[in-house]
Image 1 (cartoon, one colour):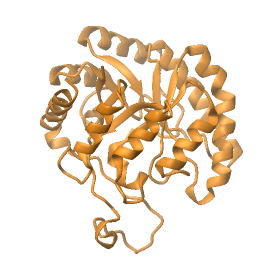
Image 2 (cartoon, rainbow, N blue to C red; image 1 turned 60 degrees about the horizontal axis):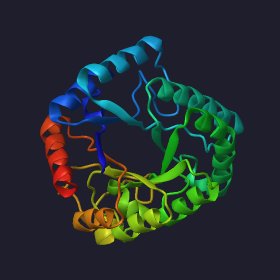
Image 3 (tube, helix red, strand yellow; image 1 turned 120 degrees about the horizontal axis):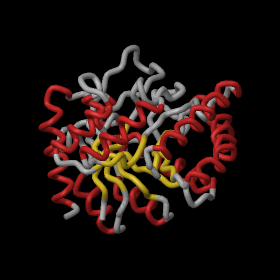
Image 4 (cartoon, rainbow, N blue to C red; image 1 turned 180 degrees about the horizontal axis):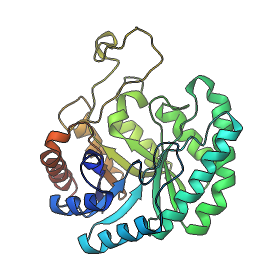
Length: 289
């Protein structure tokens, strides 16, 4: 049985974090995944949630009936600069302490690092994992890793190898549908990628949103100026507003018996957020009823 969670990112500009749980309940969701937000855990910064904030979030869970299923922190624990890496490990220690206080037992994160210094970044990620392993294990928290565009590893196969190389039962893999074409360098073989992660016993979470294939039509789905600039553009659209092969995605997930977290993570369409998230929830319930 899958758990369908809402990433309430599109509500962050207009409401408090506790109120996003209440909105999720109004939309019909039973779970949320809390992505980076400045008053909680923000990209590469020390978490700002204090005891009062945590208490308020716990009250919101109780009152709304919506549970915080996962947290999605992004800390540059693969930084080549050692001082920066140590600071990011400190960020992680505090984040895990907060997760425990919220009774969150699954977190999903990115590799980060520097894709132009991939080997050194990989070294640093493994070092951070070694240092943080006792903390994850003390709290009984599982980690699902995502290969993100512009991380030191962007391709599915290589990311899965790195996760398996850590050889720890509590470290798994998160497949991100809107990154399908980045993960496969434009091939878009979502079913194969989902199956290989599942066969390795690592598939824990799936991010659900659509995207265009940035490699299609001579790479002109997106236009970046100047050509060849060292940037990566991607999208998180509603299902149907992109080119992700959804029949293949859902069929593969059913075939492998996926029973983890499906996180609805459409970004950038704030003006119709309620309608989009309701439709996304309805589609996922239809596919996994």
